[in-house]
Amino acid sequence: MKIAVTYKDGEIFQHFGHTEQFKFYDIENGKIVKEEIVDTNGQGHGALSGFLHTAGIDAVICGGIGGGAQAALAEAGIQLFGGVSGSADQAINAYLEGTLGYNPNVRCDHHNEEHSCGEHHCGENNHSCSGNGGNCK
Image (cartoon, rainbow, N blue to C red; front, side, top):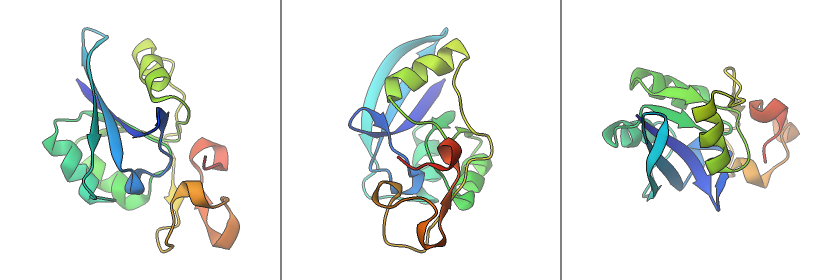
């Protein structure tokens, strides 16, 4: 199994469509056997599902994610664990232990603006980002 986590400075990046890096984890027999930080090379939003599918990713852990990207991941057969924050390594360990807290109804609806989740306060300018209980971090 191969899992991708949106990644920036050791943390889960909070806007899937704007992530510049993923941390890939290869899992065998419930253990991490390989870790790799991979640049997205400027690909964003829906194009990321193709990028991840080509990389052989089975599941994604992220913060906020829009409906279009969710649909693209589902179409590619990639399982989504959204609404997660904090350390990427801690999240993958929680996943392996079966204790990962995530939001199956995560959404991030501000795709007409020129910014990413880290640059605004959710709820301003009619945005909503319901990953992490409504907080973008």
